[in-house]
Amino acid sequence: MISSMQREWFSNIRGDVLSGTVVALALIPEAIAFSIIAGVDPKVGLYASFCIAVIIAFMGGRPGMISAATGAMALLMVTLVKEHGLQYLLAASFLCGVFQIIAGYLKLGSLMRFVSRSVVTGFVNALAILIFMAQLPELTNVTWHVYAMTAAGLGIIYLFPYVPVIGKSLPSPLVCIVSLTAFAMYVGLDIRTVGDMGELPDSLPIFLLPEVPLNLETLMIILPYSLALSVVGLLESMMTATIVDELTDTTSDRNRECKGQGIANIGASLMGGMAGCAMIGQSVINVKSGGRGRLSTFIAGGLLIIMVVFLDDLISQIPMAALVAVMIMVSIGTFSWQSILNLKHHPLSTNIVMLATVAIVVMTHNLALGVFVGVLLAALFFANKIGRFMVVKADQDEQEGHRTYKVIGQVFFASSEQFNKSFDFKEVVDHVTIDLSEAHFWDITAVSALDKVVIKYRREGAQVKVIGMNEATATVVDKFGVYDKPEEVEKMMGGH
Image 1 (cartoon, one colour):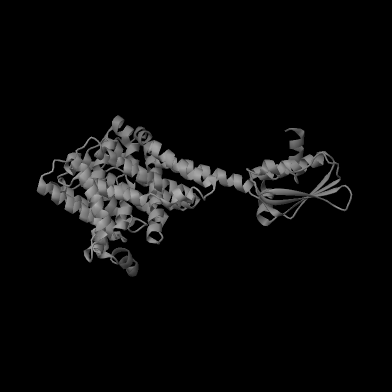
Image 2 (cartoon, rainbow, N blue to C red; image 1 turned 90 degrees about the vertical axis):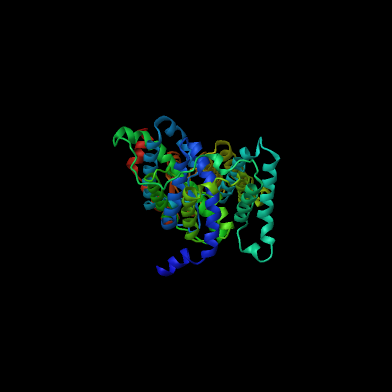
């Protein structure tokens, strides 16, 4: 217990503190922007980011991952806030947390194993594109000073690591933000700053219960929003955990992360904040800046609230161009450039899944929908591929009037039609043997196909014997098959 705490919290103190500082600075304008998207006061997003980050630092299953208010979640809140107001949003955020805790106890985090690599790649590429697109409003209809500051910021980010001694000691994104802010204040540049995004809160959040009627009508209003928020939140969090796992070459506890996200969202809703989830952009910033442990997430949340409440005069002076440079670096680093080269070498089905996931997420800004489409396509392509590996070989026995069919491969809903077409029912035979020793029957569609074959041959007057079933196939055939149950066969043949 103590060694685990030491490893997760204090094994990388310097790196975690510096990276957490960078993340805290980058979180401020994003939290404000997401609040505006959702149609609520900027402090709702800032309070949420503080509460979620601090709570998830203790309760989450992935050290070094950053969770806060996110754009994906904010998009789902727009209609609820517009039609019913902030208090119903807080209630929906609370119920969202409850659903996520239940998902953790049901071990739904383990379902990530059904998400293929091509879907994850598409998800990551789409997020990189969305992160870049989110910066475009800050780069349109602006003076040349903004472009110069952004270019200077990118130059600092990519060149500072090559500076002897201190280049490896300080995170270049932090150097970028501090140096450009100091320059802008010294020269007196008239460019857009964090303060122009919205008014920063002047007090710490306080505990409060959502002021909504506790009745069935309220539940019916918030239920669909809470379900959608919980699904999107868990999907984005699980995807982000996968990315951080790969970046750090470590593993995470997905089911603990589900529970942690739920507890964090409940905590945020009771402190006047909206629901959130893991942020791939901020998590990548954290990892790239040297953050590895839970301390980095805690510092990000804690420093965020300290800065916006007590250092608001200074924080409001940060040029948006500096933060845009950081986020462009994140989008470049997040995008899987190798996936473009892989389009030549990977199978067509893999490329279609990846590109479809990217297209759906970018067009709809709905991460859950993109992942759903990707997983569905991957499943269909897989089923089609496995279904084509099933063959039925017909062997004429020495014994006259006896035909043996040997089934090889996987028989399930995708290959059951091919299974049926592989038998010659017009051939006149007295005995038919169906050898399943090299086959596996997976579902009731496959069992139904076997029933049809056996019963068809019996109608033609042939005696049919099924041999070689493995234990799993025998179990499903015994449970759902009817060909060896005279009463059930009689019903089928009689049309009942």
